[in-house]
Length: 489
Image 1 (cartoon, rainbow, N blue to C red):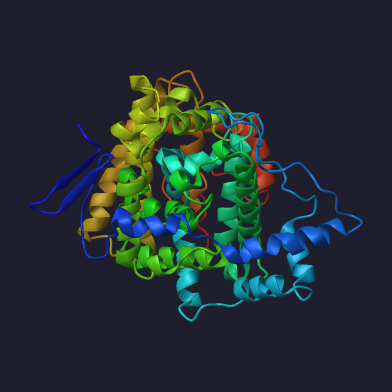
Image 2 (image 1 turned 90 degrees about the horizontal axis):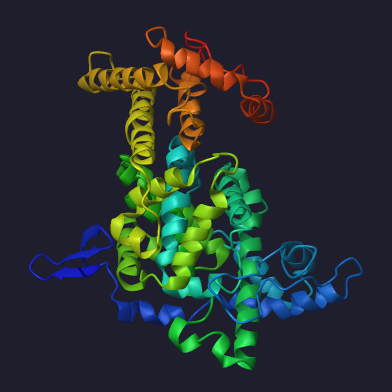
C-alpha cells in the first residue's frame, strides 16, 4: 500500500499512518521547493570575519572540522565534535560585533524582539513543557528525532557530520535535551543574553559552519553532495522542519500517541515559544503565526519530505543501538524499539528498519506510557484546578487511578521489576510518578503493599541514591506508603 494516499472526495491525505484533511493553509511540494535553496545568509556572511578574528586571537586555535570530508557513507566514521574553533563562535560574535558590518547585522537581528512576541504567552509555553515534560521528552527523542531520520534530504547532511553515529548519538541527544531545557528554563533564559538565547545562536552559527564546509567540499568534488537534488545543506525548509520537530510534531503526533491532548491555548503558547526560537536561529517564522498554519505546514512537509532512505534507516537504528542499556534509562533494545514503533507507527518504523520487539517489551511500554502515567497526570491537573470532588471528571479520574495502582500492585507483588527480573527503562520512567509526584498530588499506597516493597527496592539502588543526591539533594524521597506533605501546604 502506498504511504501517500489522497481521497479526492473528502480531500483527505494519509501518510505514514497519519491522516489529515487538506486545507488552504497547506502547502504543495511545488510551494515548498524554493525553501530548499534559500538559507540563513546572515550567519553565512559572518563566517569569514569570525574566522579572521579567531585566527588573529592568541588563545584561539583552529580545530577539527565538524564535517566528514571523506566519501559519504551510511556509517560515518568521523563526526561533529566541538566545532571549528576552541572558543565558541558566539563569544567571538558577542565580543566583536562592532568591528564588522556583517557581525553587527547578525547581532542586531538576534537581539531584536519581534512585535508579535508576547512574553506572558512565552512564559506559558515554557510551563507547557514542564507540565508534560516526561511525555514530551519521550516524543522528542523517539518520534521527532528518530522518526525524523525518515526525511531523506535532511539525512544527506546528517550523514556527512557523523552526529548520529553509534559512538556519539547519546551525547548528541543529551546536547539536544540541554538546549531544550535552556529554552524552557525561564523567561530570563529565553530573553537576549539568557542561556536559551545564547545556546540557540551557538547552534545557528554551527549550522552555518557545517553548511559552508559541505558546500566548499561539493565545489571541489561535485559527487560529494548534490545541491540540485537535495537543496542547500541546512536550508530554510530544513530549519522549519527542525522547529516543527520540537513543537507541532510533539503536540499533534508525539503526545497524542501517548494519550495526551493539549488544549488550544496550550498548543498556541507552546508554538509561540518555538516561533521565537525560529527567529533566533534564522528560520522563517511566518509559518508558525497561528496553530492552524503551523499544523498545516507540518503536515505539508510530512507529505512531501518524509521518504526514508537506506542511510536514514542506518541513522535511526544507530539511535537505538547508541541508547541501548545506557544511563539514565538502561533500557533494553526491545523497550526502545517498542517506544519507537508506538510513536512512529508501523509503516515508517518498518521503512527505518526498527526491529519488532517481544510481547513483554510492548506490554511494559504500552502500560507505563499510555495508561498509568497519563492517568496520574490528568488527576493532578484536575486537583490543581480545584474541581469539586463530586464532579464526574474527579470521580472518573480517581477510579482510573485506583485501577492503575491495583494493576501495578499485582504486577510488582510477583516481580522485582516491571519487566520481571530485569530492571528496564520502564522502572526509571515510572518512579517519579510513584515518588516525587506525590508531593504535588498526594495519594496513599497503604492498599498497595507490592508497590511499597518495590519502592524500597528502588531506594536501595545506588544509582537512585546518587541521582537524588545530585539532582535534588534537599528533597526527602517519597518512598513510603503514606503520602509526603504536599508542596505549599
